[in-house]
Length: 260
Length: 361
Image 1 (cartoon, each protein chain N blue to C red):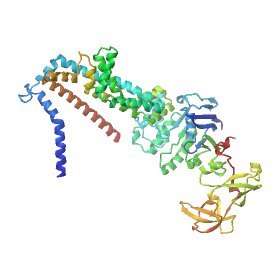
Image 2: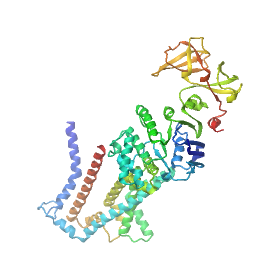
Image 3: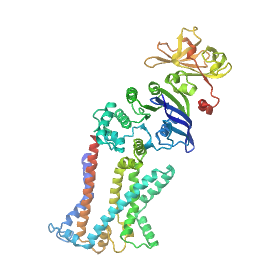
Image 4: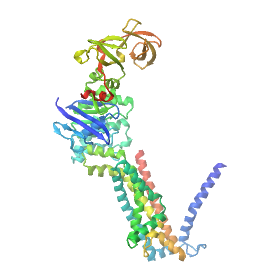
């Protein structure tokens, strides 16, 4: 009895989580414009999606900003971790506190603050301000995922490399960097998804002429949603799914290799 | 034997804590020297200064007559076996061993031969393709050795290399290390807090405490003639008792006079207050009343080879620690005697600070 109840419970949760997404995917292939009538399979909305300059531009913006912001944040964050490690423990603790605050801060506060900042310095808002903002809010996550990889153990390995005659640069490249790599990778992926996902900060820091997927959908809601947006959402969802599966499979392969 | 490493009045502090208080040390070519002391005594810092990972605040480090105080670690002709081995986890055993040779751009054929030779030396033939996390603690230890010696250093620094191994393995590795040293014919500078390790392997033991060298000598000298209570206490169990010289080569402990072999010549004139060390295995048990002093056995432990007993003196002032092959019962009254050559007389420290500095004077 208890077992049945447990299973039903899990099924209900799954339905609530995935049924809406399933409905979205199904509707994206619907011939009809209506959300309640199924008129047959069609790729019509996908065609419309790729013929709409507005949407293609939004997709391009979203992913180019995500990749660039993740890349820049990963580089700055990793360098910050190296810098922090060389500081006195007290300074390091204080700075790590500053690092953690933006993550706890509400997005709306960060968004408005950044907007005011750009206004104050008369920085015309557009692609660059969005990229700047995304880079800024991604850095703390990179620091948080790289920092644990740089510890006493990495210090020891670095010293061991020096002891064996390596120059500091060689020891860093061959020994320390490979140790940090998993943290750097996860910091990059985390930043990428955070950036793709973001709406609020983008909304406040974008100019009039630029849209990402999330701000485009928001503006379309007001004039009535076209099914091409379902097609867009489906593509985003499937992309995320593929990346997730790939990352998991890779991790499994690494684990299996380590277990051997 | 010629001198290979010399430390001259090395002083080192971290923040406000003085870790080394003017260390002078000389290590000869092909010697097995052990720095022995409790944690925090400065032995690891001494090793790190020789390895080039710390700079001394004062003093100089000489290697083969050359001043290397400011030479960076990667140019020093020494290699280190680290406490937790510090093997590179993302590299195979072979790549770990090859590291120092690849840094120096040696030809691959040379590297291959060297890996083979090193693995053979540490009895791990054919392990070059293994991953580090597939190795047991003992195997990792051997690979750390192999990695450190392929570079043919003139001195191998070993930082508590056996600390993480279990007792049985540790004893095996002690023989291994001595064998390795013989085969390589190089100098070993070894760090440990384990007195047994120090005594079994070393040519010379250097006992350290609180940043001072307490005593330097062969294992026999350190064990048989500790210069102060710290050394006596650190090297094995012992009875350390306050005494006073009552006559030439006569020391009084708890009201009983014992003949000994130290007198004015050794710096212990009559009247001088001293500390006396008597090793528990050096106290002979005789029938009651027939020895130099009497006591009652108050506890007994079987340790394996021998029994360890606590004996209380008749006036109740002193508890003696005894080790004996024969069994005696708790409550039994016995007589005891100590041969003069087994009584080690030491200078009494005048204060805490002086006790640490004692040997430097």
